[in-house]
Image (cartoon, rainbow, N blue to C red; front, top):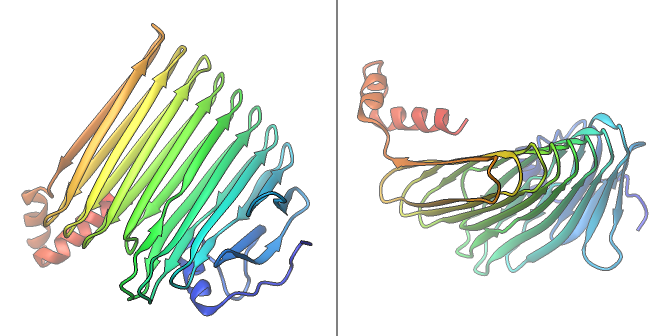
Length: 315
């Protein structure tokens, strides 16, 4: 397939793109992009420093970022817009030495039917020495059908010496079932920073799984998940941080319960080196009554006060 300059997608995709990837219907995307709609490519464009090419052995793309590329953004949103679609894609990112870029990889699933609609993105990151990546991923579910809306991302990260991957992931409603699985292997001086925000409601279920291996000397990990479980929803947080050298690792789960929401948190640390410094935290509870009273004294209703507190918590 040649490089596709024209974008050709439906109105449902366009509305989801505005939410998950800050798409502007007038100016489009400012940078390289690949748009996936219902298991097909709906638009693709490379830049001078970022090449996007289709895989030849499986569905998906290779994103190749030249060494020392700085200040560029690549967009790879994926949308499912119909019921009975099970989208599976494999995307590999090859980030050259000394590059410093932003990758936007949102996903939206729309379902107005009876059958389930699902997106499963399997991403692999290969960061060369000194490379830096800010990876932004926002998930949404829309539509009024009875069929489930499912998103199950898998992310495998391989960080070479002194590289840094920062992941900012958000799922704030509408996704019925999701399992987010992230693994990372870090070499000397490499860092991974994860900021996850999740809100579930009704009967929704969300599972987060982290597994980080700090193999290199002075490598580091900082994993923080903040979540709100409302209605009858259920969330589970599992993290394993392995310190196999002199390193620093931190894992935290901070959750708010409302109505009948449930949260399970199981952070784990495995230290195999005397100089590994590992910390884990988990806090689960309801909104503090004094916070609600304070906002109500300023003229807000109880419901408005709760929404303000949750909005601030998930920022």
